[in-house]
Length: 185
Image 1 (cartoon, helix red, strand yellow):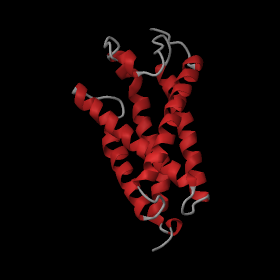
Image 2 (cartoon, rainbow, N blue to C red; image 1 turned 180 degrees about the vertical axis):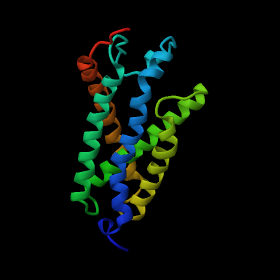
Image 3 (tube, helix red, strand yellow; image 1 turned 90 degrees about the horizontal axis):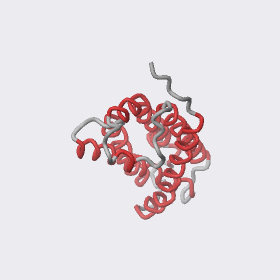
C-alpha cells in the first residue's frame, strides 16, 4: 500500500479540513446575526452561547473573529500534519480528533434544525459538507494508516474538543470587545 503522503486522495482529505471549516463557517457568518436577532426572544438562546450576546454590537463581526481564530489553528494543524506525517505521529491523532469535532459539529447543527423544525445557521453546509467529510476523512485516515484505530480518534477528540471550545470562547469574547456598536437607522 502506498504511504499516506503518496496517496493523493489522503493528502486532499487533509487539506479539505480547513476548506470545509471555512465554507461551513462562511454560511454561519452570513446568517448568524439575522438568525439571532430574529430569535432574540427565545429563552434557550442565552443557554447555547458560551458568552453573553451583545445585542448592541455587530454580532457578525464578533462571530467572524472567533471563526478566524479557529480557522488559523486548523490550517496550522493541517500544515504541521502534512509536513510531519509519519505513522504514529501525534499530529495525526490530533488531526483525527479535529476531524471528529467537525463531524460532531455537523451532527449538532443538523439535530438543532430537526429539533427546532427550522433553519439554523450552518445547517446546510453541516449536512452536505461537515458530516460527509468527517465520516469519509476518518474512514480514509484509518485505512491509510494515518491513525491506528478508533481509540486514537477518541484520544484526539478528547484533546481537540476542549481546545475548540476554548478557542470559541476566546474568539467570541475578544470579538465582542472589538466589534463596533450598531447604529440603528
